[in-house]
Figure (cartoon, rainbow, N blue to C red):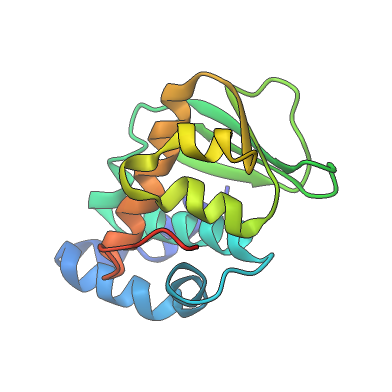
Length: 167
């Protein structure tokens, strides 16, 4: 819903080249930039999803990632204290602060740093994250790869293309 409203209000920005829009998006998302490049906090997932929502609203190039894509994700902590659901449908992204039951992919993570490592590691090395017991994945792995691609694409558009795994 938010993406549709943002796209309507920000439609004049469509006249700008993608590079200019990516630069403006980076300025608006300075909190996300700090989370991706600096210290990872518990706000990481919230800021990442907010950043993706803004980028989908502002950038035609980034929005191509969800054109014709439908998928439902559930991100949660192992203790179920944090649960966030993301639904992609009709070229829109909706975020919910609760768990959905009919997910296509579910990611259970130990902490925010584990989720960061999982999404932004070189070649999105799912196996290493699973073997280290940092992340548990259920459902279709193709959806996990798709989400990881969108997260890394956003980081690249914000000028942070060369991310290294955090120790």
